[in-house]
Image (cartoon, rainbow, N blue to C red; front, top):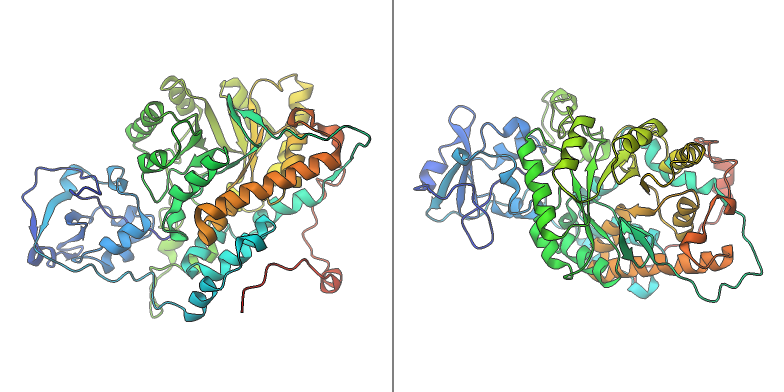
Length: 507
């Protein structure tokens, strides 16, 4: 997504890289607006030299150049946690405090507020009108800023994997059993040794502040009130400590680790997890580089309408869209991470049976079958389909108890969760639905989403003929059509079908 690389400050609300600096006058700052003279930016009262960082900035060089010589506090605080520059800048690139007053430059990602969107925010349906996860998506699309929607909803290339992740669930049917006592339903389960109230969790999703000012903080509070695990994104819009502090004292949280080329940063993050009581570290292994997410690219805030420059820099592997963490990440790094902590290490982004077997060989605690929500390699298989293959092989090899299997991507219903559990998943992650619920209604939306999924699970388990999570198994599923992928829509059928209607906005 478009993100502004900026720095932290010597204030109560930020963290500085170096405190032994005399400072920079406003006049001096305003001289440094080009590669020739250096690109300096002021943020929260501090000045930073971003000249060398330009080409490494995930949001591209243009956005930084637009703010060269200016006070970029407003846009920086919108996109980034306070400690972001600990990862990207050297102490020498922090030039010291800004001497003098300089008004913050306008946030160019906002533009003029769309009057119709503001009306929709005012008239959005009451929470009582929300009946399922997709309702949140429908509302969120109409009330959050367009750049936020482009980032949240985008996926790689033609977005085949994005849709296939969900469609796969529609090819699996149930074999319900009857005449069983299902008076009481128990949704509780254990994931990585922690008892939780339902077998699903909030998966890591970056920059929740784009859609909701409280961002990951309100997600943490909502998950805590319902005893659901939150996986903290490595690219969250609040700091790790702020998100942990927002949770209840004993609330279970996981951490998603993106591996950077600077391994020292990774080990520092692991040590923080050790100290703050995190219950599991999920190493993202499917991001050697970012996928080509064209919705986001087309809306990219860095490009001017009259810019006739070569777009090739956006599409090269070193460009701002496709750059990522460390393509040199290997199994040897996983061994080293395991030695650095006693916390469970889980690999997030496994997509084949062979890599699950490799994970078992390396004695990690679990894997997440995931194609990054369809945001990386398009035409990656649906995680549910991979799960069916993995479960079969592990059973044949008697390896079912060697690690815990999780899954994310395309989950919208309680029935989706049950299908994954029947096929051997320990738990199921949802990413975008939590962003949508949080963006539309904040903490109350997060709680409502969790409550709806719990209700669906309870109803569906009763109708399936089971009362406990550990009673679920493959005998409750008909998966004969799971691997039969139908990518061509039946337009005649679809034109005649009267779909379920989302909630109406108040007039």
